[in-house]
Image 1: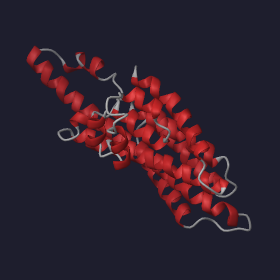
Image 2: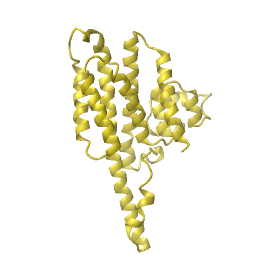
Image 3: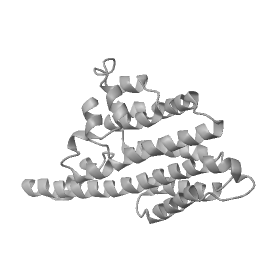
Image 4: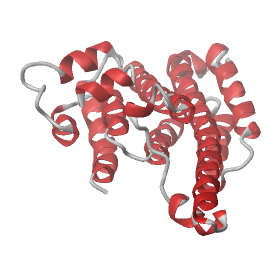
Length: 242
């Protein structure tokens, strides 16, 4: 797992923790059981081969819950997350998602003002930023999946030419696998390098949501971080064994 995290350029603190004396012989499942940081869970799960779509979906759930606690700018952020979920389900054009992400960035930079916003502004900025990260991770997934489909079609055509048959006969088997990150292929595979943005954005979204929660409570709360980590781990850990 250490080599995977290094190849992914994971946070230095996570790499140091994974290579420490008590963790250097642990596999990804054991590291997840020991870890309490939900952002690190994103990196570990991705390095262990969890489908990238699943990574985005669990962070999207956390963002949706955070947006429901807002009293300012809830409608545009809810719309962004609905567009993001639609794009995850249907694929295709993600231009609307990117446009909404830009609006979320604007909200984060200039939170709306009202008599209520003196309390909510410090919370709103990181939540809006997290929503923008989730949206951009979704766009990166769509682009990487398109690149992967192109790769698979090219490979199928090559194999079909060698076998003297149509490429379509080889596509169903190669087209059913979900896009996962392969740390060992990052140096040679442009699709994998593009996909690396997804865990980075998802982990940053988680960090922003934790920041919002800390501001909401008035201080960092390890219990809130552990609760979020438990939710994310419960959803992602089983996918490592799939």
